Structure formats: structure tokens, C-alpha cells
Amino acid sequence: MEEHEEFEHIPWSQLVERRSVAGGRILRIGAAIVGAVVLGIVAGRAFGPAAPAGEPGPSATASTAGDIPVPSTVAPTTTFGEGALPQLPGLYSEADLMALPPVGPERAAATRAEWFVYDYFTADMEPSGSADVAAALPSGAALPEMPQDAVGSLSYVEWARAFEVREIGEGTYRVGVVFRALGAPPDRGFVRLAARAVEVTVEVSPDGGTAVTDLPSPVPLPAAAEPQPWPDEAAADAPAAIVDGAILAAAAWGSEPRLVGAQPVEGGWRVVLTIADEVGNRWPVAVRVNDLGSPTDGIG
Image (cartoon, rainbow, N blue to C red; front, side, top):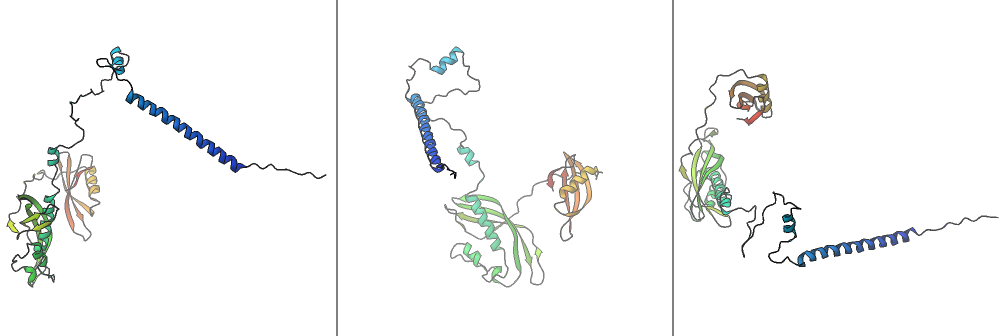
């Protein structure tokens, strides 16, 4: 007699689907109940009966009875009059805003003045000649003959920096600029010319546009500050840790450091070294280290 095996088929997909539906339904019901409870608490606090005038509220009663002491760090309540607003923390006053460094029209005027100095004092046989200079000045300005329009010596502005900005009228600024140029006569190579200073008048429009209004005016260089003299002590025999710390601090700047001398100064030592650059020039530098040999303010 043959035996027949019977396999019972369990509909897993239907069970999972029913289970998911039931679980989702339970979650939705639970969320609705929690939301109703929270809404009831909020409504009770907002529309609950207020304490009669002259009677202390629950918190005041608890404090009076001494059951719940109020910590001393709690700030006292401040009452504002009708129509008055509390002073919000973290806001800048008008004086604070006025004390911020200028970053608006003054910066724009300084940038345009430096740009103009680069163009004005550079004569490099550019085919356009002095066109850039003429374009920067008022329309129709009679520009005298410029070195850019003649075949002669060459000049390149090496750097130009504004050192002073003064407002001489509404939207008009006088900018002092120091610059240095490299010059080459027709029969020789380039030489570095002396640093000079000029003033450039710049107008700044409300939207930040700038225009140069006149030729540059020569002015004296800014007065130099009086620096502190170098230590006058004779070279001392610095401890090995001091020299090693100075050499380590200067290692990233160049190669082959050589000790020239060291003097004790306030807070540590001033160590003078010579360091070679990529082309073999040796440059003297001063490294300040503390008494443990750690650098304090870098290479001077």
C-alpha cells in the first residue's frame, strides 16, 4: 500500500500583510491617543482658571510654605510697562556698529587707487600705451604725454599699498599709496627704484562703483615708527637646547642653518641664524625661543 505524503501550505505572504496592517493600525491609534493627551494638557494650561487677583498662584504658595525652595540662581521676573519691549541680548548697539573697521566705500577707494598706481607708473611697451590711464580719468581729460606712449625707459610697479584713506567730500576719498617700481634705462638692465608715495582722489558711487578724478599728487612717505633697539648684550653661549630649538623652528624656511649669535631677552632668547634658500643665498634671520627652546613669535 502506497503512502501519500501531504504537505500543508502556509500562506506566509498573507500573514505578513495582515500583521503589517494590524501593526500600522495600532501605531496610528496610539499616536492619536498621545496627541489627544498633549492637546488636552496645552488647552488646560491656556484656558484654565486664572488665580483671583491678590491671591498667590500655586508656585507662590509652594514657595511661601517652604516645601519647594527657589534656587538663588533663578533670575527675578521683570515687569515691562504697556507698549514696552524687553531688551534682547546679543544685539549690537549703534556705537558697536560704528566701531567696526571700514569695509565699504573706503575699501573700494583704496583698491581703485592701488590699481590706478599700477597702471599709471608702469611703462612696458604695451601697444595700447596710456589708454588704461586715460580710461580711468574723467571723460575728455587732457592727459599730458605719458612714458607709455614713447619709446624710452621701462618701468614696472613691483608693489603698491594704500596707507591712508580720507573722506574729503560725500563719496569722494583721498587715498595715500606707497609704491615701488623697477626701472630699466635704454642702455642698462632693471634696477629697483626708491619707494615713493602719492595721493589719488577716488569717487565711490552708492552701488560701489569707483572712478579716479585727477592725476596722482606726490606726497612724503609716511613717517617711520621708532623701533626698539636690538639687544646690546654681547653674543652669549646659549644652551644647546636653545640653539637646537631655534634651528628646528627655522628648518622649514630654508636649509643649512648656521649660528651667528644669541642674546638673552625678556621671556627667552634671540638667536640669529643664516639660512640658505633654493639658489644658495644665505639670509640672516632672528628666531625667538623661550627658555625651553620653543619658538615664541616665529622668525624675525
